[in-house]
Amino acid sequence: MSRPIPDAAFQEFVDAVGEANVSRDPGILETYTYMNGLAQGASGTLWQTRPVCVILPSSTEEVKKIVRICGKHRLKFKAHSTAWWMYALATFPDCVILDMRRMKRLEINERDMFAITESYATAGETQVEAMKKGLTPHLVGAGPNASNLASATSMQGTGGTSVRTSMNERNVLAVEWVTPTGEVLKLGSLNTPGAGWFCGDGPGPSLRGMMRGATGCNGANGVFTRAALKLYPWYGPAYQCGGSPPFFDSKEIPNSYLRYVVWDNRDNEVEALYRLGEAEIIDYNNRWAAGAFTSAMSTSNAEYLEMVAQGEYKDRFGEGYWTFFMHPPSQRALEYRVKAFETIMQETHGEIIDPMIFGKRSYEIALQNAVRAIWIAKSAYMPTSANTGSLPMAYETVDQCFKHALPISLDAKQEFASQDKILNDGRDNCYACIDEDAHYIHIEHACLVEMWEPKNEPMGAALKGMIGSLAKGIGPLYASMPASFRDQVIYRKYIARIRHMLDPLRSAHSPEDTFMLLLPETELGEPIPEEEK
Ligand SMILES: Cc1cc2nc3c(=O)[nH]c(=O)nc-3n(C[C@H](O)[C@H](O)[C@H](O)COP(=O)(O)OP(=O)(O)OC[C@H]3O[C@@H](n4cnc5c(N)ncnc54)[C@H](O)[C@@H]3O)c2cc1C
Image (cartoon, rainbow, N blue to C red; front, side, top):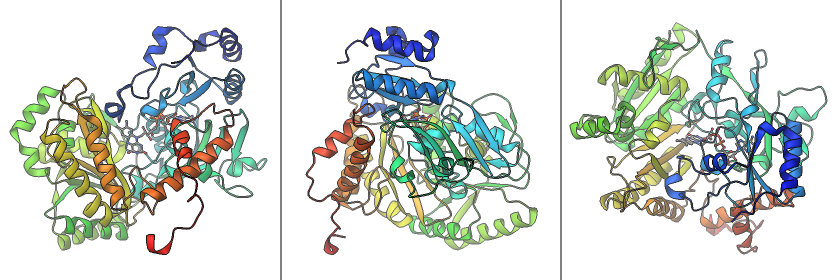
C-alpha cells in the first residue's frame, strides 16, 4: 500500500513545475493506474498500483528537480512516454509518475542523418518530419503511436523495418540521461564539449550497454530526456493518404514492390528467409497468420466472428504468411531486386500473392504495415482486448526460432486454447521479422484473453512457453545467448547490480532486481564450463 504523498513533497513538486503540472487528485491518479496494454491480461492488478502523484515536466532541469525531491522524501518514480507498455505504470508503492508528454521536441539533422528526440515525440511524428527530407526512422512493431526514445533507451526495439533500419538498440546515438540520484549524464559524443549528438561512443568506454542491457530497463534506471537516433534513406515522395481510419486510402508509392508470400512447408520458409537476408533486397518484412490478419481486416468483434466463420483467411493464411516490401533508390535497382526475390521464391516454392487478394483492405494492411508499422497493435487486442504476453519472445537464428521456439509456443497455445483458457484464434498466430539482412529473427506469439471470461487463465500458456524455451536453451524475452536458465540469472544479476549502483536510494527500483539479487551469488562472473555450453 502506498502512503499519501507528504504535503511538503507535493509543495516542492509544485514549486518545481508549476501547479498546473502536478496532480494528486484521486480521479486523475486512477486514470494512471490501469492500461489495456500488452501483457495486461497476464498482469492484471498483480503488480500495477495507483501512483501517489503525477507530474508533467517540461525540461531536463525540471526532471532533475523531481528526481531529487523523490530521493529527499523517499518516494519512488517512474517515467513514461506514451504508456503503451505496462511497465510504464507504477509497479511499486509510493510511486510518482513522470508523464513526459510536455517533452516532445524533435529536431531532424538532415546532413548527418539523425533525429534528436525527446520522450513524447512519437515514431510516427518523427517519420512524417524525416520523410520531408528523404529520410525515415526505424519504427518498432508497437506502431507509429509509440515513443522512439522509449524503445531505444528502455525497451527492446525491433520491428518489421529492422531488416533495413536495424533495431533501436543499435540506432541510439548520444543520450541525455537523468540518473536516479538526479545527476545529468551525457553519453557518447554529447559528453565532448561542442561535439554534438552524432555518435553513441564518446571518449572512454561506451555506456550504452549499461544504459539498457539487451532489452532495456523499463524505466528502472532513471529518466532519459533526449536521445539522438539514426535515420535512414527514404527514396521518393513522403507517404500520403486520404480516407479515414483504420484503413485510410494510401497513395501508391512509386518504385516499390509489395507482396504477400506463403510457403508450403517450414523448411522452405526458413531457407527463403536466410536467402532473402543474404540478398539484402528487403525493406520491410513481417510474418503473421490468419488470426492477426482477421483482426486487422475487421472493424468490430461481430465482423471478426463473421470472418472467422467464413474461414477464408484461415484457408489462405492459417499456416502463416509474410509481407515483403521493397523500395530501392532507382527503377533499375527495383528490377534487380524483384528478379532476385522471384528467383528465391521459385527455388523455395514460395507462393507470391497480390496484396489486393481480399480487396482494398488487405492491400492497405500490407502497405501501412510496411511503411508506417500500423496494425500489429490492433491484432494484439482484437477481439478480446487483452493480451497475455507473447511466448516465448525469442531472438535467435531463423532455424532456432522456426524449428524450436515456434513449435513450443504452438503446443502451449493449443493446450490452453483447447480448454478455453485463452482465445482459439486459429493456432498459429506467430509474429516474426528478420533483422539487418541477417540470419537472426525475432519471433513472438501473442495469446489473447478475455479478462471477464470465467475460464480465462492468462499466465499458463505464457509460462509454459517460457519454461519450454529455457529447457531447450532458447532465451525467452529476447534473451541474450547462451540462454539457459543459469545464464539468464547471471545476465539479470549483472543488470540488477548496475541498477543498484546507479540508484543507491532505490528511487527507480525494479522489484525484479531484488528478486534477482536474492538468488545465489556463486556463479556470477564465472565463465561457463565448456561441457555446459
Ligand atoms: C501491442 C504492442 C506491440 C509492441 N511491439 C513491440 C515491438 O514490436 N518491438 C518493440 O521493441 N517493442 C514493442 N512493444 C513495447 C513498447 O511499447 C515499445 O517498445 C514502445 O516503442 C515504447 O514506447 P512507449 O511510448 O510505448 O513507451 P512507454 O510505454 O511509455 O514506456 C515503456 C517503458 O520505457 C520506460 N520509459 C519510457 N519513457 C522513458 C523515459 N523518458 N525515461 C526512462 N524510462 C522511460 C517506461 O517506464 C516503461 O517501462 C509493443 C507494445 C505493445 C503494447
